[in-house]
Length: 440
Image (cartoon, rainbow, N blue to C red; front, top):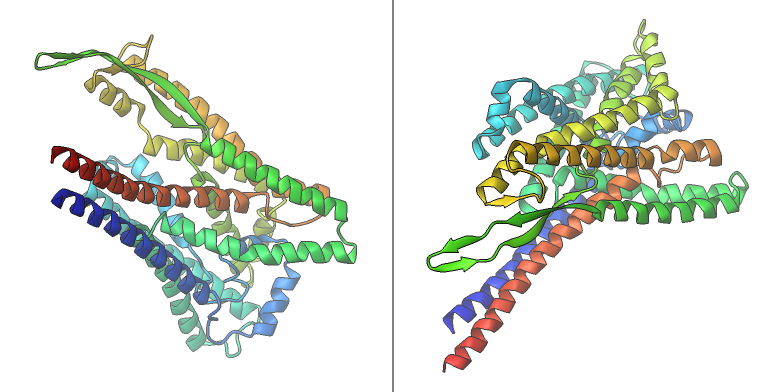
């Protein structure tokens, strides 16, 4: 009876913990959305609105979409999570290049904390560089009421503090909430812009700028793409695995058959986020620094890297493919998996344990990664085709859609795991009660 009471208490504690985590996520996202509406001191809102109206469809719109409108309002969170993502990309590249950092990654929790600390320092450096560029642009474009040393200092400190706050908030969501904090912040920023995008599409159709048939086709196409993304993200390549017979004491256990599930898109949404950040960071800084005298050539670079340009499309596609293989190589090691299978007495039918198994698994992962990279590239480049065929800048079918669907699926999967653990505790409690009655 005591064990049943303990199981029931454990189930209730599990549900209470899940409720607390979900409430924390909602509260953190609410704080984030409030922060995107608090402007940097000393900004002229009318001049800022005119600037964005003159640069519609450019790189600023894409940066603004990932920030949930923070850049358009020039809020204290205008830099968004891009400095943190850029720092993470650089840190991952350095980890692959330098054995010292690679050894830190293998040291477990202590090594992970050290790498996280380096990533935070990198975030500070990147946010300072981007903050200086953005502050200079605000002055050059005449967006500041009283440009001067005081405005430079106030705006820079505000922007850098906002970027560091978002980094801290994302880490808190990851530790105390449900899901990946940075991904959820990007998710919230993108979703917050969907109503305005949909409203603009309907307004364009009402005014005759967009054919109603084309609008319906875009809606149906978006639903089809959502279903396609869900289908691919749930897809698996199952490698059969057999376990040898084993003996415990005097009892012989028969050989068992199982499988090794490998996701079709093993890198998830990370390649799209990394590739976007790697393009947006230099393009946005070129736009901001290009406002200075004698730096007009940076404006030409920013124009070449604008969405819809051939260079942007090619670099974006190449970035997705590169980060798909790069991220998969970091999180998945065929040799370690082969060694684990060998230690457990497991083997792939028709493949010798050891090096041959590692080679076989590596070939399977390479083919899956190539297919996953092609699928992510196709989905992310859909807005470019929509711009060409439908003459709209509606972002529902591209990177935004992929991030929203994948992050939502990951979030629901983690919530389901918490619920299953609570239901398992309840099941054990009922089982203990039944056994207790039989014993009596």
